[in-house]
Image 1 (cartoon, helix red, strand yellow):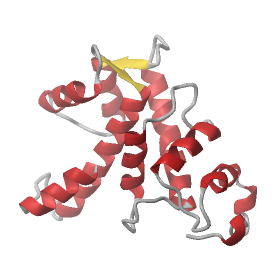
Image 2 (cartoon, rainbow, N blue to C red; image 1 turned 90 degrees about the horizontal axis):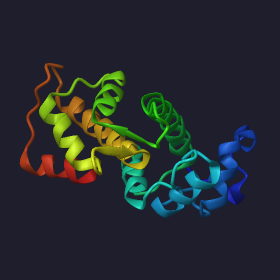
Image 3 (cartoon, rainbow, N blue to C red; image 1 turned 90 degrees about the vertical axis):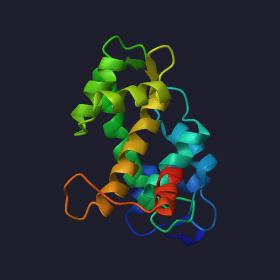
Image 4 (tube, rainbow, N blue to C red; image 1 turned 45 degrees about the vertical axis):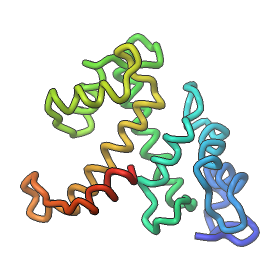
Length: 180
């Protein structure tokens, strides 16, 4: 959604997120992954943690990129900020020692608290992918959450009978897994 002259739609100008968004968005009212990275850092959405990696920002855009433009408009950014705040609260509640990381059992509890019921094998794969020395940093936790959400959304679209089973063509599988 483009906002000529960054004026925004009525009511958006009062939204503090719009100020951060419009500071990095181009005339088209969209932000790219590197602009998202700057925007999340400047707005404080990343909290006291390190800025999100560019890879994580690319994943965040792809999670909400309904028009497949590779960019994010303000409404998508606002939705992302709400999701990130919820994930940050989840992370903080399981980072009991306030180290900025969670360990495997804490990660498993955090994922379960979000409604995902994963097998030990799936959790092992997640730990191998996201942990460093058995600990998962906030940025990697967010990457994991983005991928879980995006893959679950894609799976649900194909599991039309809601049985926990879906059929994928190879090309479809590649598109789904490579986009998140």
